[in-house]
Amino acid sequence: MNKRDKISFYKKQVESSQQMKAVAMQNYNLATQLESEAKRALDMLGNNPEPTRKGTQLSDTLKTKLLGNLTKP
Image 1 (spheres, rainbow, N blue to C red):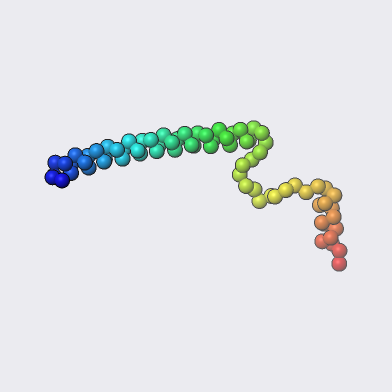
Image 2: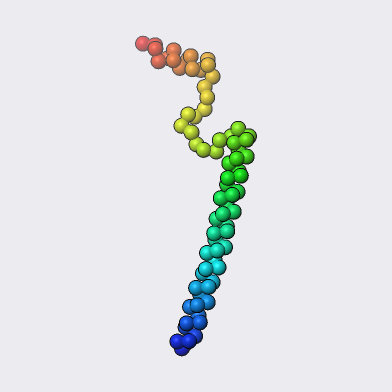
């Protein structure tokens, strides 16, 4: 491969990589938009996709039983 062929090859490679980066950016933007729409839909349905530390809600009777167990000697 002579110098002219190498230059042509690497120019095509640079052009190809720039096109791939453009497609990747479009895919990233689309994925970000889809994620945002899905989170908004979950919020509208009353389901928060973010994990919480609160866990499940306890009923009043279960809370009373647990508190009662804590106070027993």
